[in-house]
Length: 130
Image 1 (cartoon, rainbow, N blue to C red):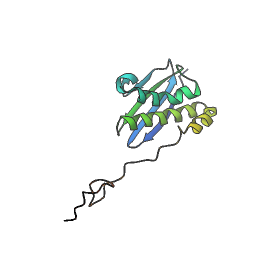
Image 2: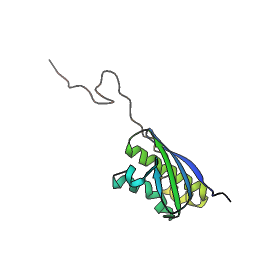
Image 3: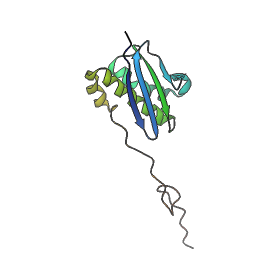
């Protein structure tokens, strides 16, 4: 009999993560690298593991992730979002806990565009009276 796998997509900023959750020993692979090799900051690894620890399935599932776009922080947020969605597909009873912590909500904040006549999105050039 084939193993049941659960797919989900997570997004944050410009990052998109495609997450596949299946039975295993708790190994997390990101873009064919181990989690520790891909994310060298402990805070980013902690962000990714939050939904797994919250619902108490640590070490029971292997997670394979393909992530693209954005920076490392955005990618970590996208992976957390994708893992949370995959967990709810696996077991609908987990949805309440994950929703309460805000892991199922897609963070809507995006980079604001630069406006003409300004140095950045809101920063102005130095004012000179003369």
